[in-house]
Amino acid sequence: MAIVSPNFCAPYPIELGIVRKVMTLTDGNFAVTDVNGNLLFKVKEPMFSISDKRILLDAYDTPILTLRENKVSLHDRWQVFRGKSTDQSDLVYTLKRSSMIQIMKPKLDIFLAQNKEMKICDFHVKGSWIDRSCVVYAGKSDAIVAQMHKKHTAQSILIGKSNFSVTVYPNVDFAFIVSLIVILDDINREDSEG
Image (cartoon, rainbow, N blue to C red):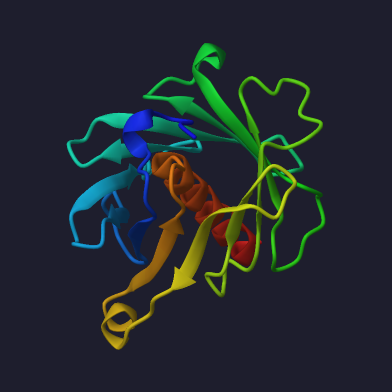
């Protein structure tokens, strides 16, 4: 199911390594690799900006998606657009919390751009971000499309990196899944600071 592009779909499961540098002064504190350690994506976060947007780049610095948080929403609403755009005509999906009051285990609903009424979600996320055990499901079903696993090592803790892996199921757009992980991380950081 190509959401961003068929180029990001494979007929077999994809294992992605996610490294988040906890303490960094440069942009690009997220790195996403394949099982061989090859860089697939990175995230550019503005250091000092009033804009709450992140840009998902491929290994060659080509903008794939722009992730923008809507600060006036009570439901942690995010909109994700193609490339560097924030134009509604380039909207790929909208993500929001299922309800305003959620403690520790966020439940998030994802609505693809063509789902204008947003009554039934196209995907949903459940689980514990702290335990790195989130699962992405298709629609309101129990059909899993991606799963996150914790992968801490003594070295990762010492050098200030948070490591985990994500298994993306066959024929699921892994750029879409990576964008969800970036948003989940941001929501978790806001919850722990708030």
